[in-house]
Length: 468
Image (tube, one colour):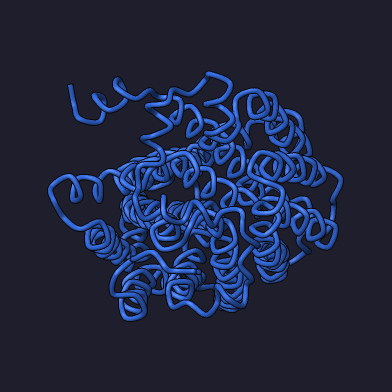
């Protein structure tokens, strides 16, 4: 029996049930936000984003920016609200809101109405990660948080896997409106499980659903025991939190790396569909009499399946991201050094995406492979950067700091969406859109190593701050 299983047998496993609830919420979160990118070709053909291809690129980017702007603003307030009303109610309110916003897309038939519903989705979805991070901080000791974070964060990939396997089929069978409606309804089912199964460890101990041994295991971190007496004190202000270099390290890390995930989330389907179009055009130009199925042309792939493959691989990265630092710690390494070493390793892998555009010219699956590695590394990085918040801050401030960093990531997402829209529109007009994607991949490949260096300079060690 492994040490991990031995601990679970000795103290209990209820905390992993809580982790499963957060996993499913995150799955729904990414299922809802992925629908837009998958339906971009259908919506463009329906005239939602304008008449010309260049206009469609710009207007699509503007709709994405509406989401990002609302998400950035919402992240700060979501963190404060969740610290204020508590995890149970805060998470539930957020999920109700984003489910309604997801359904609302079905009633938008032009760029600005889509922008409105996209902004509503961004504002309400911003509660997921502050609530999830706070839940993990409340229910897991430090040594298990990266693994728990990696597991729940893999829900982002599962949502991104499920979406391309069902959304295009729903749109083809019943129309794109139903794709938004049905995926939005799924989230409301989660609420019944959340209200029945979630509460604080103290409340679950009192009700008899949590053993004393597991409760003690959850609260086994000595430095956090010292901070427990301060939990009832007034909330810490944003100004105070912004005075710590630890906050700025998290902010910079999120600002530089969150946009990369957003770019792949919203533009990967368009990139792969474009690769198919290029190969079809090249083949038909060389074979003017061709009248067969375009899918039979060499190099043409099923891009929805390819998207699912990318996020399937990324799921493993999320779990591995939580596993690796835990192995370092079990081997005797200082937790701060273990986290930082793991993040450095994960920062190196996205460099392979520098070759994605060129490899796509040879074989689209080669480009898919490099993007899958980059997305997998991002999820591993993400599992650890979220955990640095609970490494460096007391539980009572985790949601607030997560919200501040999330806002920074949202701002970075706005910038990369605008850059992608302008650049791809420019190169589309020139008939060389692949050059635009090549430039974007350079940004995507180098962002993590830059973020790691700056974080290391700001905070050489991820140690707990003293607020009192």
